[in-house]
Length: 331
Image (cartoon, rainbow, N blue to C red; front, side, top):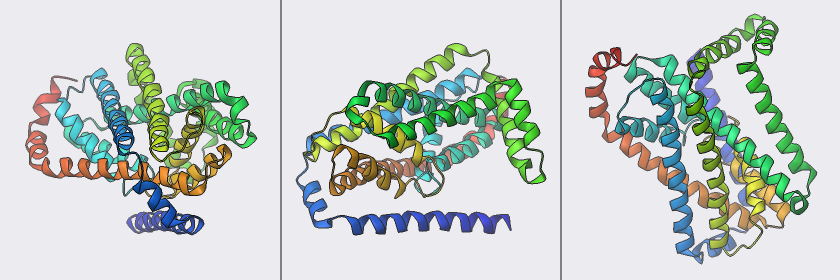
């Protein structure tokens, strides 16, 4: 029954992505979009793709840093394989969280330390969200006069409040205990257990303050690269608007894309890009083109990640048999 529910859930998300894309394509001039992309500045698109790859490299390093902090001493090659698999599976699973789930499974089986691996993946995602909210708050403070839209301010307020709630539940003992008491119903059992496990696992890092600080700095840098990618794409397409719009809008778009209601954020990312950039006077055709080009980068990287993951199956199997001997000494 559980498997059936999961299959139905995946098909529903595919359906949402397809419906959103069909709706969006009806709102734009496809020929105009194709012409715009065809005559785009190729060196600038290449620059955007290079920045996109840098984002993945920094993300990989951020996760590897967390793994080493709790003495999961993996070769960088093994972390790359798992991370590459995550980028591939995120193309087909709900939002970007699906890829996180797959790399958790991959390394949990390899290291025989599932709780610690899940803790690193969760902290990796949480630090990324903290970096996203930080960037949004700083950007809107700098560019509020330029942006001047209440819906933008409201969106940033929502993602900020959500972050505060998550941090309080996980790190404040009083709020954590109150939350557990509130989740007393049988139906809330799984949620309560999840919060309990995350609370315990995150405390593995309570004495790793330097690692956490570096991780947060890296997260802000990673989040700042996202707007630069879109800015480079926009310039390649001939769009000239103030860069502050990208630093204000992209964190909001990124937060909304995290919602597990579509596959890989497809459709949802495009719709929110059109909606927010319309506030800067950008036409639907151009905004949709920017989003689709960015998705093409995600697709290329994901396929490459899948190839890395598939062609290293034999290597992972060999390493898996060596795992028990290796990790007894590192615990």
